[in-house]
Length: 357
Ligand SMILES: Cc1cc2nc3c(=O)[nH]c(=O)nc-3n(C[C@H](O)[C@H](O)[C@H](O)COP(=O)(O)O)c2cc1C
Image: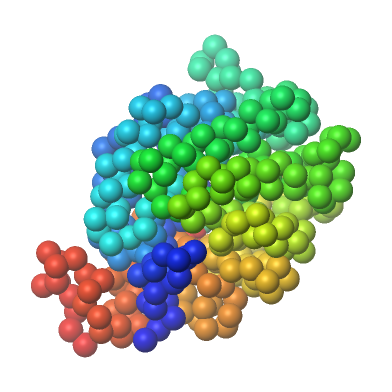
């Protein structure tokens, strides 16, 4: 049996394999409510054999949305709209997950589906953004620096959203600390210029994330907690894999179960070279340096490639994004590619299409 299709023990949950769906914004919500699009979009990956399906960056407060069209979990109507989606994922054999997010200074931007770029003006439905420091992402509107009381409210909002996510039926809660959004803005010295308990030393820059991990863990004891990091800013003087490994270790002590290692997104002047598996070395560095379980993501598009990452000990789990959009049955295809003989991954309704060895 391949490693990719052997079960993974995620904090006591047996996940049927190690090929999961990465969170992907659909920019298709109204008032933060997921709808029929999100339902079909996410459920199809479970039919396609995913071990876990992590729903998109979902804002814990309205001002934390990347765009006005993001999903949310700041009210009970949103919780209720997510519930059938989580149930559909679980009914198809995958573990339902959701990414809890706050976009900070990168909030209130146009959805790419509109064809516009940059900040949404206030008179067009935009809002004032918040950040560790009053420093804009290049080209975006300037944010307001969060004070202590506002920071406490952010922690509370993550915990409340975690309770709603659990009530909606999600079993995996991923805290979004990557891609230049609020928690990454606190972690990186390039965006955090604070001189209080949340800025300066690594301990201080990590303080907000660690408070949130603790709060989510306490609010949703039955859930598995993941943290997504950008393990490099791809810019001089920025956040890096060594700092990620240290903070991942601290987050693990506070109850985080797995670390999803991505990169970039903090500054517009990042210098990033992409290619097949380009973030795998970062995942491997965090796994070894932090002695924590990690997932690797980024241009992993075949069963053989995913299996090689696991066999090398560079990651414990593989996440993919765009390959699932190209082929919603990516895991069924990868299983065939790796010669997996267990037909159980296939929905019975689809078995007549299963290739014979
Ligand atoms: C349409 C789309 C939406 C995305 N939205 C999110 C998101 O909501 N949260 C997140 O952390 N990453 C997001 N990403 C990044 C993916 O999760 C993934 O890390 C990235 O696409 C690299 O993996 P891939 O090469 O397998 O696509 C998005 C990517 C795409 C293509």
